[in-house]
Image 1: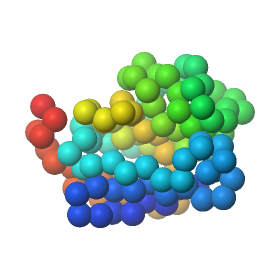
Image 2: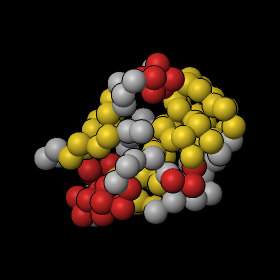
Image 3: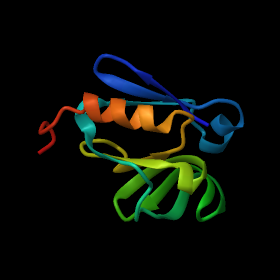
Length: 120
C-alpha cells in the first residue's frame, strides 16, 4: 500500500517494499495545481497496455504505468474496489489510481489542497 505525504505545494506518493520493484519508482511528486479532480473510486478508467510494471488481473494488483482512456496513468493498488482516482492536467500522467490505508482522509485532504481553477 502507498503512503501519501502532504507538502506545501505538492504531495508525494511513497512506495515501499516490493511495490518499488513492480512500479520501478520509489516516489511520485505531484503539484496540487495539477489536480483537476479527485474521485472516491477508480471509476471508469481502465488500463490498456502495460508500459512498465506488474499486472495480475485487470481489477486486481496493478502497479506501474499503463495507457488509459485518460492518457498515461500510474496505478498502485492491490484491489481496485479499494482504490481512488486523481485526475491530472499539465502532468506526465493523466490519472493516478492508488490504494491507501486512510483513503477517505487522503481524498478529503487532496480536495482541500487542490488549486481550483489553476488548470482551467
